[in-house]
Amino acid sequence: MPEILYAINPDRNAPWDDLPLLPVREELYRLTEIYEKLGEAKASLARLQGRSAVIPDQGLLINTICLQEAKASSAIENIFTTDDELYKAYSEQNNEAQGASKEVIRYRESLWTGYNYVQQQAGFDENYFIRVFREIKQTSDGIRPDYLETTIKAGGSGFNAGQVIYTPPRGMDTIRNKLANLIEFVNDDERFRIDHIIKMAIAHYQFEAIHPFREGNGRSGRIFNIHYLTKKRLLDLPILFLSRYIMDHKEDYYSSLTGVSQRANWKDWILYMLRAVESTSNMTYYKINDIVSAKDAILKHIKKEAKNIRNPEKLVEMIFTQPFTRVIHLQNEKVYAENTARVYLNKLCDINVLEKRTMNGHHYYLNLELYRILSE
Image (cartoon, rainbow, N blue to C red; front, side):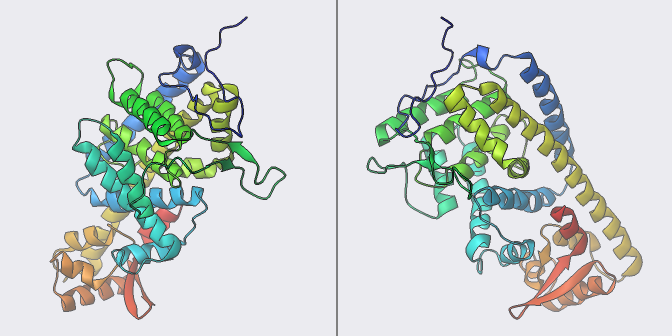
């Protein structure tokens, strides 16, 4: 009788309180196909890290790439917002954000809340996960209470829609014990000597299987992926646009997760995550290049067509930190006085760098090239 390498979930309708603890057996991931794909993923991620590290204006990455990651991760949960709604809400510094835009901005804020927290700690802890979850949901809630009979059901409108596909462990003590095991696994690189990207894939599955919160687990888990890569110094900043790949291959994402619990198919799950890292590393790398090239070209254009603008470098830096710029942004950063800022932004409209839009009685200046790049 063959040895059982991973105990699968015997009943998807009952809480999987026997979810195996980490680590998983090496035989499940030490496979030639996985290590070949791992090499490609690591090369792509290293190229992205090298490119981002030499960019002097990190605001290009922080405010633009992270906002796109937030939008895509929210869309996975069927939280959709248009680019205009999102960028307008962000330009208002969260004051007027409503509905889906507000959810997306919360994701972005949780991305930074968790990043700053974990960079100041020796490693991950339960408080890290709770902080990220609370920021996403704007709640004081925590680990799922014992009484909740949480199940995961198939979405959509197909034949299986509404059917239970997974029931996570139940009971706060059980959840906390399994979360503590996950935390030990990701923090201890001496005891658990696994390549960081493979470890991230294993840890992401385990977090989603534990499902520690009543909601927001998908977004919390995807934020954790990026924070893990930054904590392990594979990235300096949380700029990997990882959710874009998951959004584009959503069915494969969920079927690969289910494949582990129902068939112990770790191979396909890890390969999926490796492809996600490779693909999104390449996409983010080229998107950064496009943004930097557009910024340089626009600065050159401004110096040629609007020679009387004072400190054009700072002006260009400001219009590339987010797609919509307002006069007040330049004032708050003490770049220009109010009247000067308005004159300069209007001048950029005259030379086709910006487009002035009026929404709800406020004037916004849209960076056309940045908007185009982020929309691709």
